[in-house]
Image 1 (spheres, rainbow over the protein chains, first blue to last red):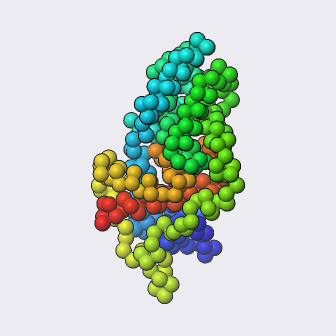
Image 2 (image 1 turned 120 degrees about the horizontal axis):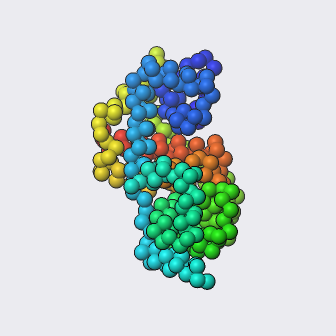
Length: 85
Length: 214
C-alpha cells in the first residue's frame, strides 16, 4: 500500500490505496490528518471515499447464505437428542 | 435482516442469555444461531478445504461438536469465536491447505492490481501528477444502497474475488465480524487482513462503478 510522502502531500492516486487504512483507523494521527486535509480540498477523493462507504453499506445488505434443509434438519435432530444422550 | 444488522445487536449481555437458552434446549435459538453463522463458517471452511461439499461437511461436523460441547463451554471467548475455533480445527484436520504454510502472496491471490486503474490519474509529466483526470461519480445523491440490482452486482463481484478475499469481505462487511475475529479464523496478521479487505472492497467498488456509472 502507498506510503505517505515526507513532503506532506498525498496524491489522489495514493488516497485510493490508503482509504482502507483510513477507514480501519490504521493511519497514524498525522497521516489521518493529511488524508482528511486532502479530502477537504478534493471533491474527487471525497466522492471516492463516499463510494467506498456506499460499497461497504451495499455489501452489508447482502442476504446471508441459507442453511441447506438437510443439514438444518440433521443439526436440529442432534440438538434435540442432546439432552437425552 | 442482514448479518451486519444482527451482529450490531450482538452485545455481550445477550450472549449469556443465548447460552442459557441453548443449554435449556431452545430450538429457535439454536436454529437462529446456525443460520446466522452459516455463511461465514462455510466461507472460512472453504479457505482451508477444497470444494463446497467438503466445506459443508466441516460446518456440519462443527455444529455437532458445538452441540456436544455446549455444557463445557466456559465463556472465556465469545460463543462465535469458540465456534469458529472448532471449525478451523476441524477444517485443518481435513489436511488440505497444508495448515496455512502457504505464503501470504499466494493466499491473497496473485493480483496486486491497484484499487483504481493508473490511467485514470494524471501522469508524472503533468503539472498535478497522481491527480484524477476525471472525478469519480458522486454517489451520495443516489439511493444506490438498497437497490436490488446493485446488491446483486456486489454479490457477483464478491463471487469473482480470490477465495480468501471473499471470506474477509464476507466476514467483515456481510456478517459484521471484527478484524480480530477474521485474523483468528484465517490465521493472518492484522496488516494482511487489511490488505485483503482493501483489495476486496476496492474491487467491489470498481464493479459497482461500472454497474452504476457505466
